[in-house]
Length: 440
Image 1 (cartoon, rainbow, N blue to C red):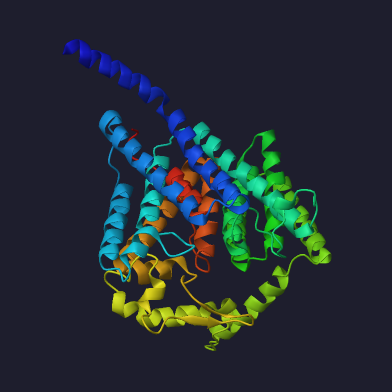
Image 2 (image 1 turned 180 degrees about the horizontal axis):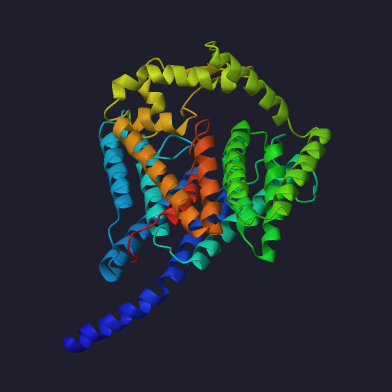
């Protein structure tokens, strides 16, 4: 027995030294699936439900890896794990009380974001939180940016209608969206990529950091032509955080590279002018419209058409929240929550039903209940505050990059929806921001 125990301890020590590398590779495989899965979905008749099923298969592997790490590697329990467990519990309660249990488990048609998908997100966040080394985090971030870069190139090709000899890239739409299924979802994807690349460029002292300026400009250009206003709002708040820290650094006389800030601003303005002159974006008109609508709302004047009819959706959703306040209507069960009075929205082309609230926090409230919503928002606040604290303590550019992506996504989520093509990246970012008290 002593010989076996000794051999086991040696094996465990050897594994402990290199587990982060293998775990990083596994997380990159998950990220790769988002890219290649959408590639075969878009161009090889794969089916969106099959893409979603891929997530569920990864969930099974994630659970096995988590079990292995806790048994073999003795992962220390952390307070953030409490939030993930509670989210899982209240998600299950929501499933039990769901109007349509099948939809609550697998997700609504062409959404497929049911309980199994949420558990997949939580497992990704947990596994990502076990990554400690800066090198490993940088490795994962670079892969996220790499796949984002390819998507951004495809988006620009779609909008500017070049490389016509590659017909599978062109999707017959004026909105660029890369391999993602909708330009709004593509916008949330670009917010994550812009935050990661901009943070790495501004706060990394290495000369190689200038490559991230190039990546940011490509992401920024593709965001302009995807015409997603929520992405502009997310980027705006990212810039606000950067501006606040810039002023703070000047007051505290911290060493900052002003040339980098000026470069980002000047080149971004020039790109904006070029895209506007090309007539490939309507975002600046949308920003003007949004400012007018915001002013009217501040005056107390509400109109159902505001926010591309989001005001109409939010108003009607809030009416049914009291009925499902404690346990929710069921994950992805928004349509069924309205019963015989299913929520419809009129548009110039057609009358369509609404299956998402277009506000991730309100979606959480009505579909999973108030406890799940409070836990979710509290978890995000804790991640944000602890990350800010860690950045000021260590001045770590990796933390700032992740923080900018995290904050930008959380802001745009107020106007957008969670989708299985993009959300896993956000949950990985959340996990990489976690500061566990004890290393595994």
